[in-house]
Length: 103
Image 1 (cartoon, rainbow, N blue to C red):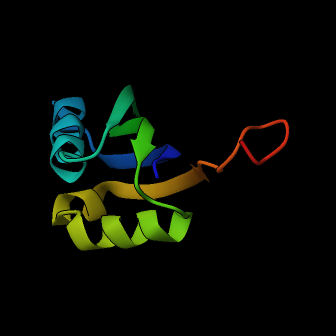
Image 2 (image 1 turned 180 degrees about the vertical axis):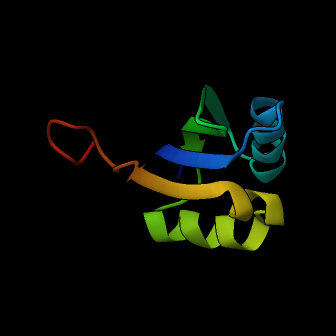
């Protein structure tokens, strides 16, 4: 069963240009078979580029640990070299209706 998935990443590197496009490509490759979309916020301060990536959608992960295991197994070296922080929230679907939990 699919889970609501919310992932936030902070990527940082020295300012060289086209960082937003590179992060978009990294996320496209990492999540190519998963129904996730992202919004990238770009900042440049004091010679560094910062990208905040807000990723959300549906995934088959049932916990934050599942998401971390997937990312550790599939992320490339560039992802890890730019990553400075992250937050993950996975909300598994519950069986039954929200009022009684049965139907």
